[in-house]
Image 1 (cartoon, rainbow, N blue to C red):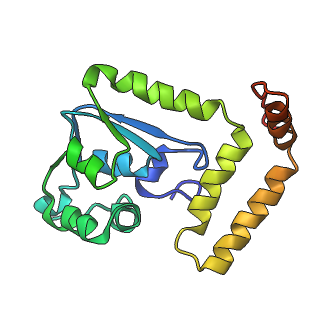
Image 2 (cartoon, helix red, strand yellow):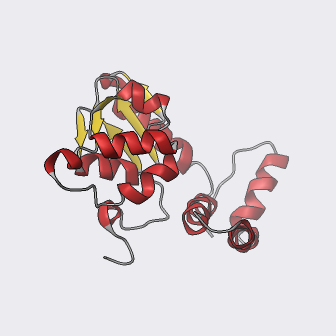
Image 3 (cartoon, helix red, strand yellow):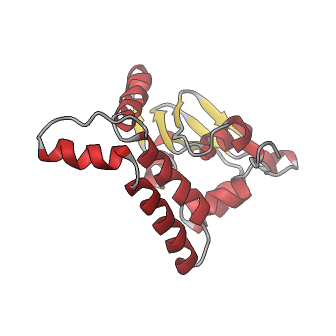
Length: 179
């Protein structure tokens, strides 16, 4: 464990900063685990993914055994984990493992465009959204709602929470400062 992060999340130092994966080629075993630790995922149409560890007598111990069934339907997660068989980018999209499939020559541009969309938003609000999702995952509703309420109240105290509605009323683009 490094700073409370384990497995494939160790490569993501600031766990509340959005992380976008752009997959071109193969994401096998550990590569697929890193992909699964990212928040948003775009894959080139020819990409292939697999958690193939069981074919080698080991397990995907970088978080996928816990994370995958929380991200996609249980039966598909179990199929991926238990068979180790590869899947196409289109299949990964169909089951919700990737957000988008695009041509290889458009991949980086799509990832950057998505990052720019996120970067235009209030940074503290974006961070709070990810933090609440991670901290509340698997908790009973009452406890999860408490975490959400705490974050929402904190965000309402920021300068950005004043700037956003003000800019909307004035019909202009907000100038967020992260304060």
